[in-house]
Every structure is written in structure tokens, then in C-alpha cells.
Amino acid sequence: MTATQTESTTADGAITPEQFEVEARAFLEAHAERRPEETFVWGQGSENVSLFPERSPEQQAADLAASRAWSQQVFDAGFGWITGPVEYGGRGLTTDFQRIWGRVAAEYQTPSLSIYGIGLGMVAPTILAHATDEVKAAYLRKMWRGDIVACQLFSEPSSGSDLASLQTRAVKDGGEWILNGQKVWTSGAQVSDIGEIICRTDPDLPKHRGLTGFVVDMHAPGVEVRPLRQMTGGASFNEVFFTDVRVPDSHLLGDVNGGWTVALTTLMNERAAIGGGGGGVGLPTSTRLIEVAKATGTNTDPLVRQQLAEIVINDRVAGYTNRRAMAKIAQGQLPGPEMSLAKLSLTANMVRTYEALSSMLGPKLVVDTGEWGTYAWTQFLLGVPGMRIAGGSDEVMRNIIGERVLGLPKEPAPK
Image 1 (cartoon, rainbow, N blue to C red):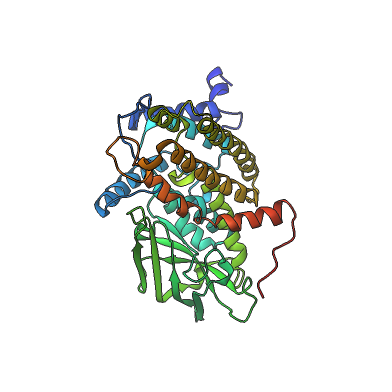
Image 2: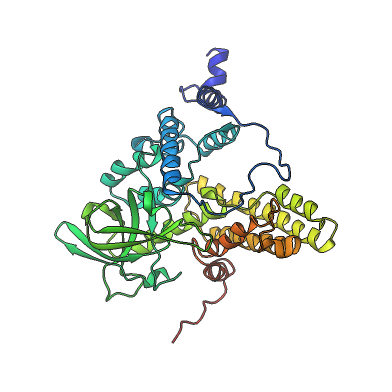
């Protein structure tokens, strides 16, 4: 073995982390610009701190086109689904290689791939774990290449965070299922090609046991997507109506009436994604918050300083907890109730953040004085309630942590 081979490949010809990084950097140098050093200067650049994108349909279409083109280019170069099974389009490498790609790619300016966050972070792992071989072959490669977008269809108007009480029905009809019902708060449904849906297939069974999961074509006859206007002014969420929508039997996820297990797989991955800041949703940088304090003259206020310190400390601790959970996933285990802790930690720190902003900005937080970097925080403030519901409400997260982590008795069922 030559010196070059020792550095680049193992004895059996497998790529080493060192060679992978060389390849990744060469690809990015050829196809992207290096990210300039970012320095935050008060009063300069964008003051946008909104939690959810507020795009026009035209902006959304342009962003999706750019994201798709970049995702396809990355995938075709071998840097798309780095850890995925080779038979479904992955590269079959370990998470160490994924971390290398993430670290190197962060040095370059590339289109955001957040539109694929739900599909790749929540739906794809569920398809890989529970779908038929036909469905895995049909969708996984396309999802990871960016050819298609996927959404999650769980919540319903009358169910809230009680997923097991959902009422959307699926009735068997020969080799197909006929779906009727309504879903709500579905992110990205307006641009999605497929969706993961949980339906009630046996109303006579206990509510957790009569559910079944499916992969549904979002372009099928009978699927109607309507945007939901948020109090931020944007429409990041949708309600989706299903009227006699036909789904092939091959598109089952898991067993008939075994949808609760399927849903838990998705929910744990969802909380892992949200808790880890997946999909581009996370806390504003501590630098920006500190600059708010300086600009408002509250940086010497001991109470404000304590509020800022608590935000930084809790964010750091949550990061360590998330790493432990990610290590578990890297070992091939499903994410567990610790993901509820990650999600709750994120939203709790969002609440701390807007409480600190209220202390620093006062009336400027809710009245537009025209001063840079003040009223813009309203978009963050109005987005936090949505985040406290997404992926399961704070109250549901506390119940999960209390019962499954701390071993506390379950809450008494309503009579």
C-alpha cells in the first residue's frame, strides 16, 4: 500500500474520513462560493428574526427551484444521503462522514434545504422503518435527491395534540383504501408531492389500536390544500381535505391497525429535528440579543443580564442533551422520550427569549417606532406559540417526560 493509499483508503478500498473531506471540499469549491465571515453590526443588514418564513407564492416557487437544483447536484456527487442504505440511493457511510460534510458545507454559501426538512427528518425515516420495499424504492431516493417534497399529515381540528383521537377514515376497497377527512397545521403541504398520513381504519378498536399509516399522493384527485393565515401575517401552515382519495394497498406503513407504532417513529424523529433546530427553526444568536441590550442601554441592568445568561446556559445544556440523543440514533436506535425533552427545552428558551426582549425593548416590541432591530422582534414573538404546538404541545411534552423519563404515574383519564 502506498502512502497515498494509506491516507485516502483503507485496505479494502473503503474511503477514509480524510479522503471524504478532500472530495467534499473539492466539490464545494467547484460549485459554491465561500461564506464570508459574518459579523453582526447593529443597524446593518436584515433585521428579520421571524421563526417562520413569510414568502409570497412567487418567492416560494423560486426558492424551491433553487433548493431542488442544489439538492440534486449534491446527491449526484455522492453527498446527499451519506448514511443511507446503498440500495435506496444512500452511500452507506457512518454518521462521522455526515458530520464532516456538515462542517465543511457550513463554510460555503448554498441554497437552503429547509423545505426538505420535514420529509427527510420525519417522513423518510418512517418510510425506511415501516414501508413496503416497493414504496422504499419508489420514494426514498427521490426524497433525498430533492426530486420530491414530503409532508406530515397528523393533526386534526378536533384532536389537538391527542393524535389517537383522530377521525380521518380509511376504508378498504379491494386493493386500495379510500380516505376521507381533514388534517390541519400541515407545514409545506402546498409544495408537497407525497404525505405521511395516519387514519382510523377500525373505529371499534381502542383509539390507539385502530389507526393505520399510509403514504398518500398529494396530487391525487380529492386532495385539497388550503393555506392557513397566521397571526404573523404569513401562511406557513395549511389545512388539507381528503375526499374519496384512493391509496394503493402497497402504500401502507406498517401493519393495518398498527399505525400508532408508525406515528411514534415519526413523532420521535420530529422532536429530534425540532429540538435540534432542524428545518431552520431555532433561537436567535446570543450576539444579536446582547446587541439589543447594548442598543437599549439595558446591558448594565442586572436582571436583564441574568435573563440573557439563563438563555445562553439553557441553550448550551440543551445542546449537550441533544448530542447524547444523536449518539443514540447514530447507534441505530430509535429516538426516545429524550426527544420530548429536547423539544420542550427549545420552546422554553424561546419563552425566556421573548421575556428578555420585553424587558429590553418595552413598548418598542409592540409599537413600531421605526427604530432598526426593535419592532421586528414581533415576528419572533408571534411565532413562538406555533412552535409550542408544533411536534406536540408543551403540555404533552411534560406528560411524556414525567411518565416515561421520571417514572411518574399517568394523569387520570377524564371521566
